[in-house]
Image (tube, rainbow, N blue to C red; front, side, top):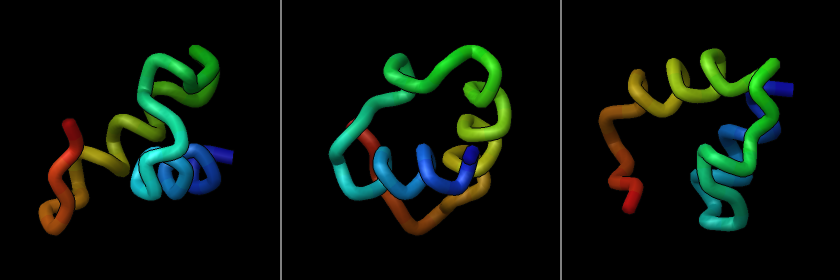
Length: 40
């Protein structure tokens, strides 16, 4: 599920505050590890 939310954020369809608390830490870790993207 974290990968799904990560992809949605990466595609600009969601933001981290849209992610349920259950998955937020894992999604944030994926975003932090992604050094190729810029998120506004």
